[in-house]
Length: 288
Image: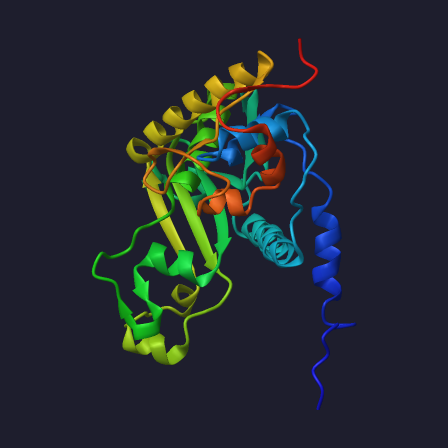
């Protein structure tokens, strides 16, 4: 048998998703910045805001992962709508020049009053094995649990969901969100044998996790990151691009180096432009 180096049929969907990825998604309210840039690089936010040319477009593997995530989101939302009639999807909101939309907003009368407030906000993230195993505290290779236990959702994802929650509350005083439900779906399930060894009960838990994040945890993260992004927005409006500063996995501010090992730089769509422009706060060309 021969393995083809240029799949003609099997890669059809992947190539279609690659073409779709070339169309830049607008922000929810036409703002310069978006909630989903939470914990991201200030310089990258600036380039996106001014519509800078993309020098490192997404490759087909990246488009595949992103496209699958979108498909899973949409199908899951459709099923949630059948089970919870009050569910609203892609509810948008805006805070200054930053906007976004949540995956779902559901009344507690539909999902359960034990969550507090009037509504629950749901945010879904699809991910590879490394990130999923970290969230649930698995050492998949050794068929055991990690000593540190589950890490839970990333702070970046919680902050993004929290910004959505605060924005929705600000625009609708009748909504109060005490609990954010963070969903995680792995793109590969834990095998049955490993699940048995690790005492993972429900089959859903082999590839799905859900975390209930209370307000006292999500609100400070969201407020802190909103403050940082508002400052970057002011820099952009004044005719400058923000510095290469992002937050790491622990929420600490970190200066990035496009020539270093920072993963954000490795996947940045503006890496070449950023290298040419240099570090620090820089003037936007053509702006007086």
